[in-house]
Image (cartoon, rainbow, N blue to C red; front, side, top):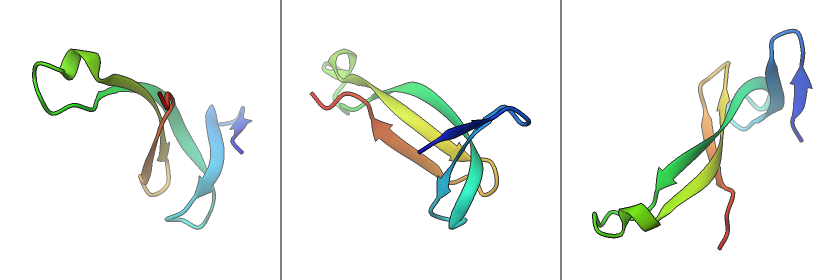
Length: 66
């Protein structure tokens, strides 16, 4: 579970690379999942993106499982 840290304005989460709780930058981004140009406009999905501030490990989790 993520927790906020007011001192450095980030989220503390477990990092599998660092193998400990570290500060992460968390955002929501839209990614296009289709590689075909004609369907690309219909395949945009929101993802929760978490990047470790210590090692740079990035995790993406699709937010819409439709």
